[in-house]
Each structure stands twice: as structure tokens, then as C-alpha cells.
Image (cartoon, rainbow, N blue to C red; front, side, top):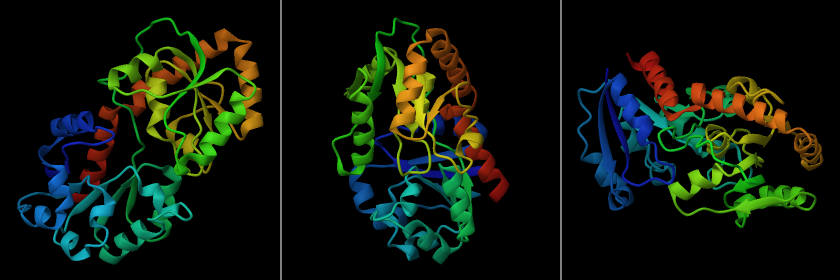
Length: 301
């Protein structure tokens, strides 16, 4: 199967491990746009010869091409691999309803969506969508088996309008417990800091799916305490409360779970080990590449 993947040279979340594994599964050609080429996307895409390929996979910012249907229509066998498709369902978001509208207008796009529930909603709207969850870079992030001296920790942004609810929830937990709210600058620092945390406190609110941060923490051996998304999301990912993660419904529920966990270090260790096993088995970028290949194979081969 011959596949053409169009992506970027620089990405906030590198998917090079996905690309490398995909290249082992099919005859893959990768075109990486520079920042300038992404800005001039009309010219950049017009210059691409996509003849002879079974399909084209687009991994470029939706904001750059969502208003260019004629340009995108020239790729007759097109799959879109995007981590932000959940924005279609976020009330008040700049791209609310725009993913679905665009895909229905062209009616030939296979949308690869990172949320199980959001995928089902796209399908109900008449969009051809398949579920492949976010994952983690297993080539970079791993359990270093070092001493974990941070009991409760979170790594990531909270001082942004996008994260008002995240910040409120984490601050509410912090009001009772010694929860460290941390930021890191480099991949190495991120790896090392995750490996210092015993219980990673996640607070994904409003997305109806799990962000990559959860799986990165699990892959590094943290015990994950996370906000339950519902709508079948946990079942689709294999997340089981108090077995490989600890799920909570609101701040009070999170606090109750933390009280239980802090009194039982053996339980924390068991959940963390089960979570790491799940991450390594089903949530690595290599596994995600295999799932993407299956989607492409089912659709275009």
C-alpha cells in the first residue's frame, strides 16, 4: 500500500515515532512542510504530485486549510490525522461545528479522531470518522525506576483561558493536599519530572476524551488519577477504576480517592504497574501507527 503523508517539520507533539512505525507497515512517503510552507499552504499543496498513491494522509493544522475546500478536494483519497478534532464539539470554540461542516461538504475525507465518544458523534453527523486515541512517545518516555519523591503532581499549563476549569479543579485539590503544579521546558526534564511523581493528578474537563498527558504519565510509571470522561471512553481505552487508573467525577470525589490512596502505598504501586502495562501494550505511538494503518487499509486498499 502506497501512502503519502504530509506533515510539519516542527510540531508541539512530535509524531515521528508514529511515522517511523507506519513506514514499516506500508510504502510511505513523507513530506514535511516548513513553517513558511504551512503559512503558504495553498501554494505548497498545489505543488505536490499525489498520483500513484493509494491515499494521502494530512497532518497539518486545520486552521490553515479548513476554508480551502477546492484545494483539499483535489486529494480524492484523503485521510485527516488530527489531535484537535474535539474542538468541533467545544461550545464557543473557534472551530465549533467546522470540522463536521467541512468534512460533510467534501464527503470524501476519512477523519481519524482521537476520542471514542467524539468519533461516534461525528459518525452520527454523517462524517466518516474512525477512532484512534492519542498515545505517548514510548521511544522517549519510560519508567526510569528511580525514587519518586513527589507524592502528588501535575505537569502542564493552567494559566490560560483554555484551562480555567482545569486550574479551578487542581487548585481545589491543592487546597487540601500537597499537590505540586509543575512546568518543564525540555523533553528530558519532562521525562525526569514524571519519574519523580507517584500520583499524577490529571484534570481533562470538557473535551470528552483523554489528552496525551495521561498516557505519558502512565508510560512513565506514575499512578494516574484522572477525570472520568464517560460515554464509553474508559471502556474503549481499557481504563478500569482502581485497577490501572483511579477515576473521579468531581473535586470532592478526587479528594476522597486521594485520601484512600495516600493510606495505601501498595495499592498505588499496583495501580501504577497495571497502568504502565496498559500504556506499553495499547497506547504507545507504535501501537497508534498500527491502528492508523488498519484504518487506511480498511478504507483504501
